[in-house]
Image (cartoon, helix red, strand yellow):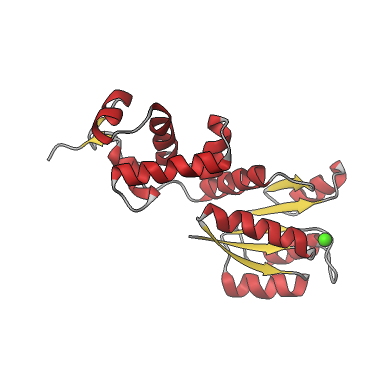
Length: 206
Ligand code: CA
């Protein structure tokens, strides 16, 4: 599970982000409403990624970002702000932000961006190496595991490390449809976790 620190003083936003991330199932979430609290929590929680609001009651998000970098936190920082001026974005990037999303935001887009940032710093460990076995065709996956054509696509995306939100975007289906298929794929393969999917797409010679 990746640890995400949300720095956001508006309770509605904080709750919405927290709900979105928790629903995805791959994240644990800590929340700070003030800059000072954010820095204390960052030191304690060692987050894998920080979602950072710019307007905070004590100091602004730029201060938090600068301090995080000064204190050696190199994790991705995604600024989530109502400020949509180019100057704000440039300042954020100059201070070491990795991405910038403006409010109001789409939950799916936020999830996709968080997932992409984390993949950039944590390359997938589960992808089977070539030579690990023969890749199974779509037809073989359908025959052997009883997957539908759509579930074959979902399984291949899961093996790439896509989250349910990313699968929803890639296949143009709703989040809940994607999650439903992902659960079905896990059940049909008989594996407990997404990390095990990659190996199921290959014929292993024993
Ligand atoms: Ca704010």
